Length: 234
Length: 291
Image 1 (cartoon, rainbow over the protein chains, first blue to last red):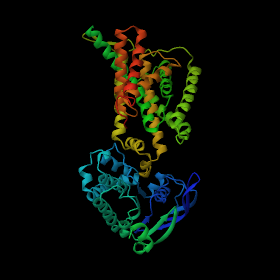
Image 2: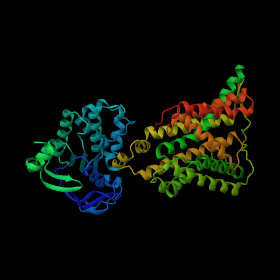
Image 3: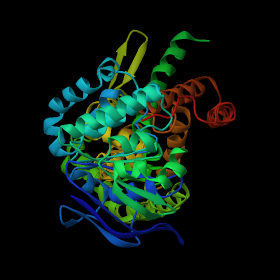
Image 4: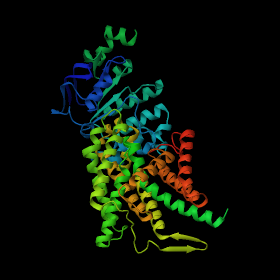
């Protein structure tokens, strides 16, 4: 579905990603794990078109999307829930969702999608008239996921969805991602929360210093001694 | 103090201030949304004033009626200017400074273009109703000012409606509050900025016509108008449309009252003195920045 072919991304002279290749299969949850500063967010921003590639290509269903502007990539259904949520703080929950359905396709379905989002997150319906900036961290993460769902994603990419959240909220978010996956939504989760991420994922990649050092079945990786030692502290 | 005179200058001030506000909202918008301080904002308003003047003198089209032509034209002009000149500098690190230098150049070119086409003489937009006055009790309402006030009211409400109620307007706010995330939602920053700039220049066009109905104007009038723009934004808060509206009226009231009760040469001293006091006490403006 999404094929990342040997991309290198640089900040000035410094390479943040070197020769990274990833395959995301339709209908699966793919995990990208790695410590802080390993290049995970850079990778998502490269896919979304926010960060230009130095070399390599990104294909979406066989079509090159690297080099397209972010709005064109979003229009194909490649949707990111950014790190730190990045909501529109002085707009209401409802308006945030509405902007999520900005593109013509999602706009036509907005009413139906919003109903679904409110079913997933009943709390958002209660808070629909409130400014997004005034919500708690967990509620904000729900808005961020809701906003992304409003864009009718074919691939949902979540960047550190558990960052700064209480364990119970994190659990809830992961549960919903798994539930959406059951309904056929392909996902890419980027996280330092290795145990929880791997346990809901099918495929996994381990990123260290901008390079893929391990790839494979998520459950196998969970059992891998190196992963256990470096990332799970067991 | 004479009550009638006070009330009268208050009314005049509010009406003048409303026109400053109309001229200022677009300036506030581009500053707030795009970090572009458009020094040529008032010059576009002046251009629109001269165009309406010519349309009136040559074809006898009323300046208010000609807004139907000038507003879309100004919107289009704004979009073109954005696409060709402003967009390339928005990637610069110091957008605010580079935008001021660039738009200063645009202002000089426009001013000389106006000079070339219309000459240096001061103009007065004298319509059939210029000297018309409504009298209510002891108070009188000059028709052009009333018209300018209504125009400003409509203009400010329209922009406010655009930003708060339409999807495109919401996208403008989203793009300002969170540029990256707005792109992830499928908003094309370049396009939305272009629309914002077009709307801003169209507002300036309406404000310019409003100013032309109140005062005489000449090719360098925009320099004075620009000072009022800064006043409006500093009082009203960057990017805050209702703040700009309030800011315009506050400045209008101050000038109106000081004109009535002080020697003329003190008027500007008071206005700018007050501005300095505001800047010292509340550097972020009286109202919050908001879009």
